[in-house]
Image (cartoon, rainbow, N blue to C red; front, side):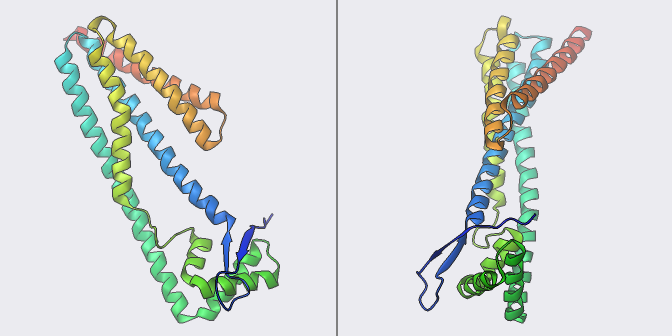
Length: 253
């Protein structure tokens, strides 16, 4: 069923009965984009917490008193994994940015070749979304007179041509999120005495995962308990398995 998208009117553009039409949906899309970045940051922190805690628990299972080995493994693991994540994010977002740029170029060419036809298409798209035909025509005409390129990109592709995705920002955010998450198990392992390093790390990691699960559930408007439980179970299993592996190899050596 088609849903009518509300919009607002103002009289800031001279010579036009409708100055600007700003769809509420566009504001919601902008908010959703910000939430996606925040959600990605939480997921990056989760990766740092789980992967580095598993690594350190596995190393500590061999000899919890070997602080030097734990520190070297932790720092090397953090640097390697954080760089791997940021490079992967850079490549992924760069591909997305290239695609967006091509879409912008294609839309510019279409508007230059047939502006009237593109305006009719815009009116048709608004009509498909529930506006009456006359209103859809008025909306399309007004938006085309204001910024035809932005009107098409926003409605058809959800792209802001003045604010394309930035691969460097994505890579940096991924690196920092992973770094912040991974520092928790490393600092816990190094600051606590050898006799309680492993249980202290288990507790700190589970508390942190519970918090990030709660935040993820809020951002995704999902039930909190299942989101928290999934992370707690996954983190516990990861640390338990690496502990067993480290203990087995430690005994064998």
